[in-house]
Length: 115
Image (tube, rainbow, N blue to C red):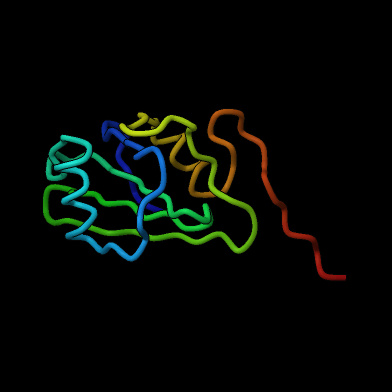
């Protein structure tokens, strides 16, 4: 879990992103495509074409971090808009990371108990 302080803004980059990009490529995308400062302390989240992998870039004031998460089943819920960003709260980001629809919190997949 990313320890996001309550005052940090979370931005989802709409559309899909080439998940082969690393930290420098995603930071360049934040600067050029989104027109924002990646070193301002905001979290920027990107999703791959398949929908099961996301990457987040965050500058916490000390250094830049890159987080990645892949779902075994299901897909991350993503906005339908093309181009631009969508703002989330820290709570909505927690739902997103768990694979829960952050717009209407319900599980998209629940593991079955082995029996």
